[in-house]
Image (cartoon, rainbow, N blue to C red; front, side, top):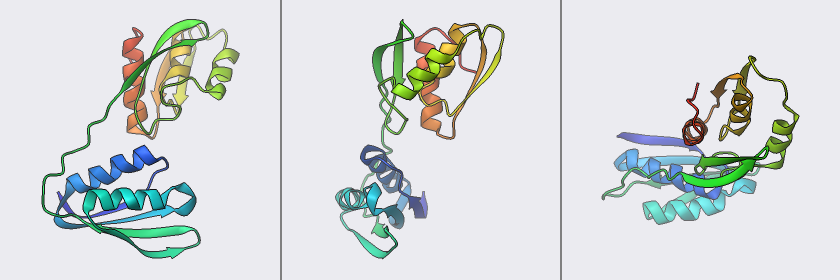
Length: 176
């Protein structure tokens, strides 16, 4: 546990709620949360969520479309948030595919148009070494692996990496 959490709010209401709940879980009673968020990215909704979790939260400064908020952890039990993975059966390049994803991963629960276009454009990858950089849910690399490529998946988001691992396992592939 810690006395202070400094947080740049991520985009997305559900992801914001997850990180605010995580902040409450890791703070000691009386510990402070200081967060910053852009007005256009839902900081006011995040403030309401912080008030619900912490009992009190307020904006202490704002400049150029950004708001700095503050909250203090009250006494009580604040468990670590549980990360739920949803399974959706989709078609990827005509093949049935189990997609596993969670809040905060790009295009969670679906095959977005850009990813579909990228997958459709891939051909003759047998024996190629492929890096799926920004793997998200892993569908691009999975499609390359299905063609016989040796794939390494990478993402800055741990949630994306875990979503990729779960998607690969659900479709009979080991992650790399």
